[in-house]
Every structure is written in structure tokens, then in C-alpha cells.
Length: 84
Image (cartoon, rainbow, N blue to C red):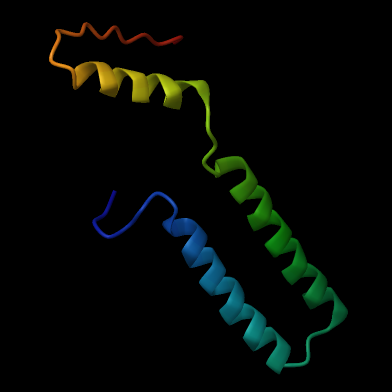
């Protein structure tokens, strides 16, 4: 990943572009079809965010437990698995 970009930089870039396009669109007296298309883009971006948003899951709890075990000074065996 290029330096300076974070995993959710796409969200910030999309928000800025929506604001810019919205301002330009509203200044030029948009037709109803253009407003509908713009609203469709916003709904699509919100759907993408809904899919990629961070959520708490079981693995996050396991990661915290492993980090606590590593910190107490005893040897820890980590076994990595993949369903592929």
C-alpha cells in the first residue's frame, strides 16, 4: 500500500468527491435524472461501506488473548491454519 494511505482512505476520498460533485451539480440546476443518478451513487457507496466496515468478531478476541499470553514471559506455540 502506498505510504500515507490507510485502509479506509477510500471512504474519505469518496466523501470528498461526493461533496465536490454535489456542489457542482447543485450549482448547475440539475435535472431530476441527474439528481436520481447522484443519489444512486451515494446509495452504492454506502452499500460498499456497509460491506467493508470494521466489525468485532471472535478472532479479535483470540488475538487479544494471544497478545496477553505472549506478554507473560512463557513460551507460546502459535499454529496458523487456513481453510483453503
